[in-house]
Image (cartoon, rainbow, N blue to C red):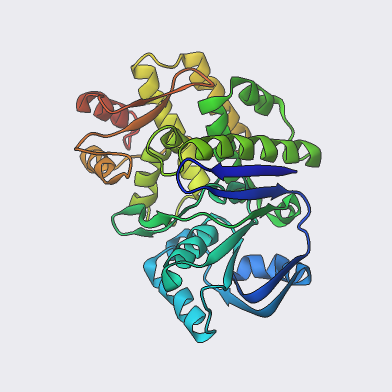
Length: 350
């Protein structure tokens, strides 16, 4: 099963997202696989049996969002220099969204840009993070504020890698799936309400539909100047939560789940979403034991942090909101007091 990315409107970049069993891969160049000890322990041997190259190296970096930093990227770059990679060399991102983001960003920097491919091993990275060329790292000021749009040469999505995924990590990926359904496809949302994702055929179909939705959006808007921003539903709130908790409390998808509930509360206040629709979204998140609440310690500090969000501009906060299930709107004209009143609902005494 192949889903194409065709960025013909900007740079005539095309590549394929391949869903199914990982094929044999041969590269007549130097190749470096970037991974972490957790993924390597479960799956590296499987990958090595599939890959042949003129010269093959492994770089392992620590596991976790807290290590998604410029310092880790510099560590990877130093290894690439040690291996004497040239401009025809290739990086392989083998892991979840953190590995994919850092590997792609490293590829964009090394000798002003070398090729990389994505082999995602988490549900979140398979349905979202590996598709579309967003790369980067976090900083003290916020999530993914340092990075580049840099497209891979290919994406290989093998659902078999998900067999070892902890339930919490799996659920974090489901949050991104729900996000896309709420924004773009009411029928898909209804399917998810009744789907059994422990069934392999159902899971593969859900991955396919999610990737197709993401690909359609990326093909229209690679650099997130328009409709691609809609994929950040829940993220405006989630990124503040992640920053406040030093990326150590919530998985990204968990923070997005809370962020969707917060965004829905704002949409309710603006009469964009009905209570029954908001309840359906919350119920689907709860079906996968995703968190739906967060105690905001300081309302004003939380609000001020919105202005560091990449989507905000000219001192206006841009919110991605559900307009019913299956539709969306982007608003940057919401009164500060309305926003803060919603935040107060998530205060410490909620």
